[in-house]
Image 1: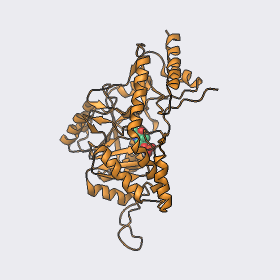
Image 2: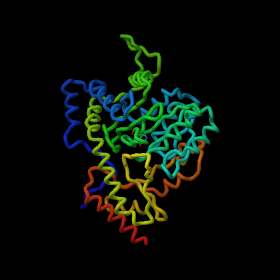
Image 3: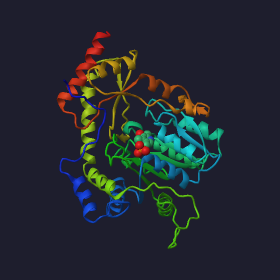
Image 4: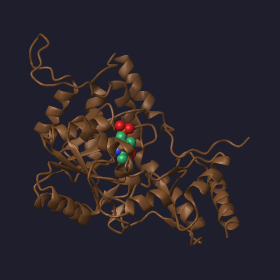
Length: 372
Ligand SMILES: *Cc1c(COP(=O)(O)O)cnc(C)c1O
């Protein structure tokens, strides 16, 4: 029986850094919440991406939620959001009682189309925030998007859940907007099993986020609350895993890049297959290697690979096509929809050997040749 090849799974360091940091937490009885690992994980991550402040939280979703709250998004406010993404990008807009307006992507980046963004802001000049996403580790067109947001005086939030380590013109994604968020969920490039981080250069806002994330306790001996609170802080044990994972993030990016170039080298002979876009102004982390098919059904290819115990996934189904979000406004064309129907995320697990990669490639070639 062949072992199953996975899309992307947790990969702890060979050196055992994560265990060392967890043991420290055990030895000092700083299990939860907060403690040394949380402070240091925040500090080490801010150094890595080069930003001033960070709040370690229980998930990337919690980080998006508190970014919206920090941006003063509330009941009835408009938030412009990339449609092609995971639902966790958009759900917190609803948590805040705000109204999403979805915008299309472009083929050049697969992320937010700046022209569609501008059209949305012309239609909704009162919008409070924009959420751009850097899908699969690809960077959005940040120069255009930040300048449009500045022109319309709207807060930019970057969902960099999938793009930790990706740079745009040499600067880390997640550090261009007023707020940026990262995720350390199980399948992300580094993981704490679950967790997230909110980053910003605004010290006061990050302080406030930490306050909200620990139940909004006012400074009294007794429990006193003058604001709504949340239980969103990262535990000290999980922050220990994060510190260990951060040490090997560059190794993981290197392996992800290797996987991508392996597929490219082996599969670019087929005119049926196109690879996700690469731009000379961006250095992606290649979290997932994603292809689109010209005429062949992506479901057929995924079924064939599944029969061989090879895990794949479609590209995210756009939010404006989701039953839950279908009644909200959408601005743009059919790019995100086409990417969804034509796209296949290939196994990008950093534990894969060359043998595993050849197995995936062999199977894809077999399908290509049998379909002419
Ligand atoms: C994973 C992910 C999130 C959510 O992060 P969690 O830590 O799972 O809550 C948000 N946005 C995108 C694009 C993601 O891929």
